[in-house]
Image (cartoon, rainbow, N blue to C red; front, top):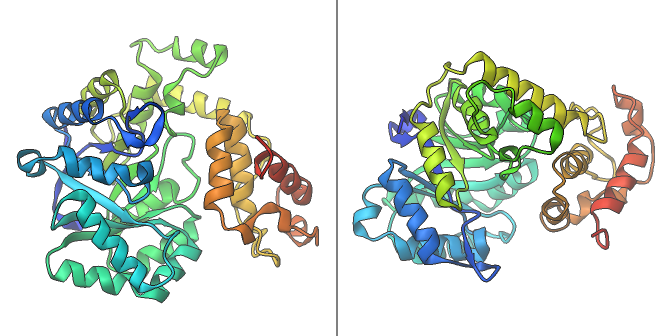
Length: 381
């Protein structure tokens, strides 16, 4: 296992982190993690050198944090760093933050959380957390030793990312990054920006929820068959991320023994700047294949914003593209219906035409928003 320094924290973290968002469950119930199966996977990963464990308040309906509290005895706990997150969705007041934090200590069965993040920051969530004094609360928890280091996870566009990075002396951040999303959200530009400021960078979704680990049909199967080393799509995707300077650790939601073994094996050679020409070619051609399936030629320039009705135009177009590109309708519908504020939905569009006048791609945005809402909104699936 390779280890890298997590920015200014000085912590040595494994190049591969264990993501606890998609653990094996009992009988299809996402709120009941299978302790025997998931625990064996976690222990094997730790034995192979993984020392960064990532969870969050809402994962598995709260059972992800409880799972770690149940399976990490004193010996394992000393060998790992646990990261969890403050969710924005149930927070309205500082008292909500205090209640959630206290509940997380109880769930994790610990008096100290090594790494703590504000979860899923975008412009709206960032403004809310600041208004309720969340950072002051977390600074106090850090001062009294209950929290080690502070960071944030991010889902918005690059200008917002830079604003958040510059607004507070963060220790680290967590961004979505893979060979398809090189210029989406924070992207590689955000990675460079955060690393230059001394932040450790944790990468989530290197396999896009496992979608980049699949061959993707006959065309992609023929592409992967051209690799002279016979590597799996997952290995190439992970190596692509580890090749980037500034990446501290890469999270993988491993839910099978073979995935743990393969990912840890690949992580042993996870050095920045070492990606070979064949891997670069495979990643570039696979990226082109996925992007060719996009239904909207949106480049996320945000010239369409602000929408006078509050519609989050780039995000909604991104959702629709993702659902088609990866054939992942249930998850994207959930993100649209449950995790996008109702006043940002596409059906608020009144077709004023301002966004279409500003769009350099000439997209008929009103029509595309209508299509997206029909495909993703209530009653669509």
